[in-house]
Image (cartoon, rainbow, N blue to C red; front, side):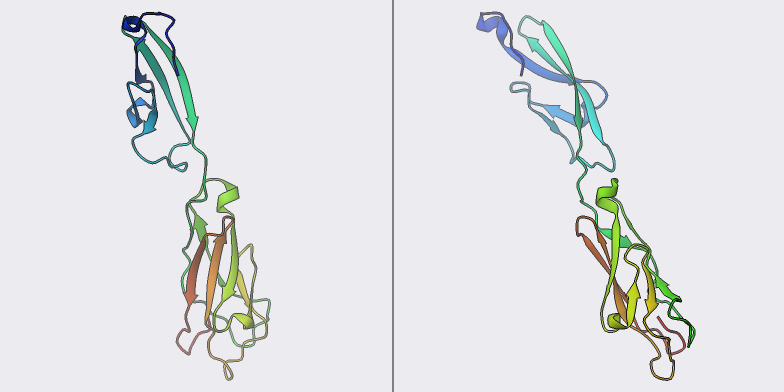
Length: 178
């Protein structure tokens, strides 16, 4: 908000305008001085806006104020699972053997919003374990092809804001385990 010390209404009418690095990304109401973005803010693309607000009176005298508006990072992106939908394990392999590793990313910039936790659900989830931090899936008991030829489960990637992404790992052909 700007004021003009001139007592005459003819000389203290103000109009507002913008200049500076990011002025072309903004609009200003020439009467009220309200500044608005032309497009939605996105922390992952631009973390702040820098511009100058210019107040000009009817006598063409002006004053300028440099302004920086910071964009607050929100948890607005869900995790994206990029790993495939199958895995395999040899029959009688040790239970420490990793049979599948989920790979996921989250486009949010800050660690508070892009840290992922992994979990399992689905038909055979109770036969498996998953490392919540690494996404490595292991069998709880050694695989026995004669009694069970495949495993079906869902991998869930959850970011720290509880935005969730699912991947169903289907039962593969009888020749592999997933």
